[in-house]
Length: 388
Image (cartoon, rainbow, N blue to C red):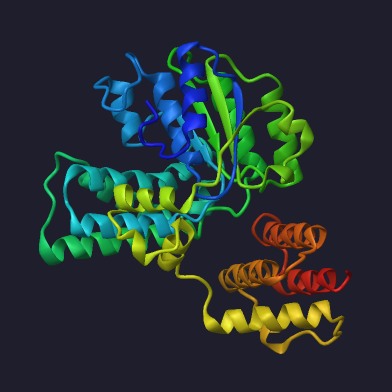
């Protein structure tokens, strides 16, 4: 078990021990840097906790078959994450090699996104997915056809199929909330408490640090007394952003930063890439990320410069942003620009960096959850950035 979690030996040893001794806690925190294998570990732990045999990766039991395809009904995956770079990279692997392993890689990558739209999470809010629903149904059918054992098209037909899958995933990604809505936390609680007993249930919450206060409070109540036969796993790249009251209820598993040679092996073994082309996993996935346009980058830089200088004149280029998709793209451009500036600064102001991150998170919540007018949110953000 955990053979697919590369170069996290201490974590693997701890998890294997906990599984063998039946001492896996009901609430866990997987913390550590981005791309260190936290989600891989959480999904593999969910499989081993459901396994009817010894938990080996190639176990033939029904639970393991469902888990390997990320289709097990007793696992809930929630939380925000941009999965489009991983999906695009996995599709490229399948273009070069149509054997079973690349097929599973792409199926799992796409389902990491699709499973975040589980009907359990969106009960009562189905109207929010009306436009995306036909794309989700088409994507689900495509994924099923990619599973090993089904015939694959060849040549241009395969290229068209993979292009369509990547495009569909990009469309669906836009419907994923930037932060975990409180309604999702309440649905998770209800599902864990009231669903039929028997098989083990696992709840995985990605980007747990990116939650509004209402979601944090609802999650805190869930973690105080998790239902029987249920394991909750929270994932975070920024443990310091979690409430201490939440952290105190979790057993922390701290993932290390992989060394360059270790990341190179991940690129070779998983994505069949020449590691000499890339500086590491972050650079590799950045190449698959579409990112903000040059126009948005320029507007973001001007917005930050004028706001931090206390200039009362609101940038004209930004005042033209009124639709939510453009607003989200602009926030992403601002985030990228700020992160670059933090990286380029010899002595970054960590307090200000934390505040800027919080301001961007709250701005997106106001647009997506509270439906506030975009111009009003932008002016509020501009004012906030000029207060320090």
